[in-house]
Length: 464
Image (cartoon, rainbow, N blue to C red):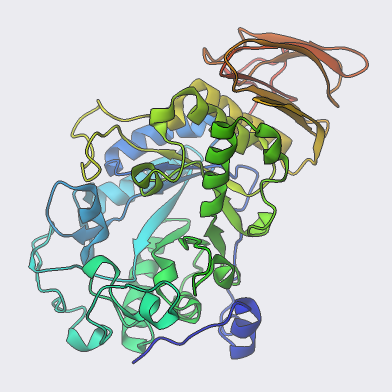
C-alpha cells in the first residue's frame, strides 16, 4: 500500500481530511511554558541524563531534554546503531525500561521535561539479534512487523526530486515501514503511547521527511494519549519534492537552514546578515533552531564543537535572538564519523553545561517574547536588545570591542551572563539614558538581562 501524497498546503489538507479534527490533541509548535530551551544529550545513557537534569539542566533553567532512541536496536559500537530499531521494547545500550522511567521521574523533579527521539520510519538493514535479545531479519520482527508491513520499493532512495522515491523507497538500505497501513500506524501509536505513559513530554520524529505528512498526522491522531510536544525532522533541500512546510500542521519542525546560515555568517564575517536570519524559512512559531546536530556535525554543513569560540558564539546568538525555539546540541568528541559514544565520563563536549550557554538559557527565559530592538552590527560584531528585558553584544573578531551601546534596559548594574567564567564576576552599568559602555572580549560576548543584576542573589546567573 502506497503512502498518501501531500501538497505543500499540508495544514489545509489535513484539516479537510479530518485528520486534525478527528483528535482532541493540538499541534504544539514550540515547547509550552516559560522555559522553552531544549538540550539534546546525544547518546547519553539514561542514568547520565538524569544526573545532568539534577546537576545542570534544572538549575540552568532548561525546559526540556531530548534523549536518543530508547528502542531495542541492532548491536554494534557505531552511533547509528541506535537508529536501527529491532523492537519497541526499551532495551537499548543507553539503558532499559527501569532506567528510562527513573530518568523521566528525576528530570521532572528537576523541572526538566523529556523529549524522546522516536524512530518510526524504518527498521533495520539486515538480520541478527538486537540489544534486548530479539532475533530479527530485515523484513521480519517477531510479534511486531512482517514482510507485508513494508513498502514494495526494496531499493535505496536515489532521487530527492521524486516524492514517491523519497517516501516509499529505502533510506540507506533500511527497511521502510508502510505507514499508510492501519496495522503499522497502530503499532507505532502504541509505542508512542507507552512512552507517554512513562511521562515523556513529547517526541522528535526521526526521518519524518521520508513519511508522507498525512501518515505522520494519522499516527499522531491514532494515539490514545495526548501526544504532547511534537517536532518533525525534515531536512530542507532546494528543489526537492518534500519540503519542511508540509509538516507544520502537525507540530514543530527542525529548521536545518538555520544552522547553515549561522555558519555562513560567522565564517564570512558578515554578522549583520543575522538580523533577519529567519527570512524565507519556517515561521518562527513552527521552527526549532539549532547550531548543529549529530548529522550536520559529521557532514560539515554547520559549525561544530571543533570550531571553538565561533561555535559557542553561534549558540549565544541563537539563545538571544527571538527566531524559533532553541535546541542546544551536546554530543561527544570524535575523529571517526561512525564512532559511538564514550563509555565513561570523558569525551563528552558538555556544550549544554558551558557557563556561556547556561547563562544564556537564563537570558532566554528572562526576555521571553520581547521584541528585537537597538540593533547594531559592524563586520565581525553585532549587538541588539530584547525590549526592556535584555541586551547582548557579540564579538567574533580577533581584538577587543570597546563601545557604548544604546539599550532599553532600566539603569543599574547588570551581570554579564555570557562570561566564560560564569557567575557575576563581570558587571556592566546601564546609565539613566539606557547607555552602557562595554568591553567585549575577542571571540566573546556580553549579555545582560533583568533577572541577573548586581543586586540579585540566589544563583550564579540570577533568579530563574
